[in-house]
Length: 196
DNA sequence: TAGAGGATTGAT
DNA sequence: TCAATCCTCTAC
Image 1: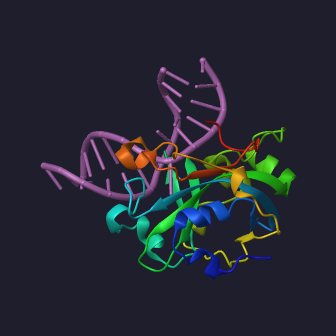
Image 2: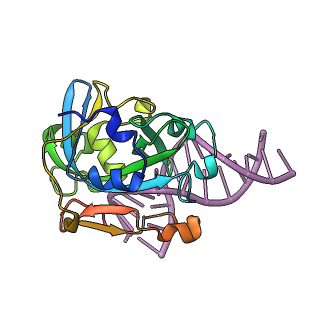
């Protein structure tokens, strides 16, 4: 069942980031269906320095984060990698969840050809890799997740809270004390999580 | 308008 | 450990 927008438009981005674990992200790009179980997420909020929209910083790039929950926020990182985030909370409460890793489920041959690799291993185990495998790019920035091209489904899987690990987020040393917030979540023992 | 740096990755 | 690579943001 496709998640509706109300799921994303709640407060407490950390809770939503945890609830997304076990859900399935789908894309249909170029008429190719691909999908994977979300196994790793990170939460970002205007209340802390790790976030692009910290202190309600409003720029061309962060504009989409000020929209209602359920929009896709896709941006280019290091000039090379597209990063896929899901905007949460209400309008003008800029918060988002970075999808860091998936467990491939659907359209695996499509993903392998997009990645130009023969081995399934670590096809989607990182934020830059999974966008490439799923065909996600900046043209999807600002798209609602009720779109035909990208959405998230609940397949009934419930991840027990003791199966969810929380650590500090990766690659945001510039955020000072806020870099220590335990806002990175992943499914314990899953082999598809990004490298440490 | 120039310069610095980044929510990463894969090769060395 | 380091380069790739280009967009965004800030300061002048």
